[in-house]
Image (cartoon, rainbow, N blue to C red; front, side, top):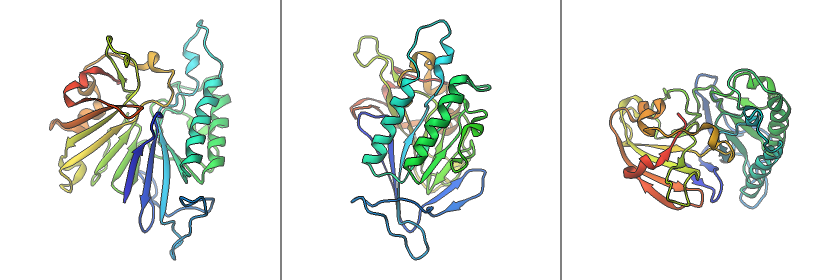
Amino acid sequence: MLRIRMIKEHPLLIVEHHGEDTRIDDEGEEKREGGGEGKKRDRDGERKEKGDDGAYKWARYLVAADLHIGFEHRLKGVRVMDDGYVHEMLDEILSIADYEQCNGIILLGDIKDSIKGMSVEERKNIPLFITELARHVDELYIVPGNHDSYLRLLLPDHVRLMSSKGMLIDDTLFIHGHTIPKSTGVRRIIMGHLHPVVSRRDSILDGERVWLILKVRSHHEYDEGKHDMLEVIVVPSFNRYIRPLHAHKVDAINTSTTLTKIIGGKGIARAAIVTLDGSVIGDENTLNDIILSV
């Protein structure tokens, strides 16, 4: 059983798996079962016991998307902060991962910011950032995004770089969002890439990051007839400083190639627009109040 919850005041998800084992499939790569050796703990902070088959009976992952480390290289001639924001993001992730006693971390793409090549800032900060994350958890998975060319050159060997097609935990597909999902039999898709923010000029919420939770009428390509509804969770960008660089006012839902493919012409049955503090501020009738990066 997979349980998912949002962390209040943070653009982070907790994904908990309870069952006979934790199965993680790399879409397009070799399949992998069970947990590795390490410091997995139960809710009381003790080491979690393995079953007879050597697999851990539960796992808890922290999920984040769109870090865009090195984004400051785009602001030529503009006075911006130093790389203190990288340490800010690192501290935020590690504090939540420690508090929630997470076994692992899943990063849904756009770890780096430049689409082609690597900037000096990325070469400096990404290896330090990822290495420090990996030191605090047993498993670190990265689903690459459209900004992550050459990312593998910056990663330690023990970090799992998954296929850009995503990774599957039970019936939930984790993708960045720039590629069209191909998995069948899924009940839920969790994605980043779109950087949803509020667009209400007369509101104090204007420009605030939000979650999008969509209920889409399933079609055969994804659920093989197993489920009536497909849930799509769009994760806000973790980097709070990139919104002015990447957000554009568009007919957001219909312009997003990925969402259009997922919806498949059947439309959105229900939707919730949720702020980081957990307030529901809109539904399927107010999606035009949202800016997406597409």
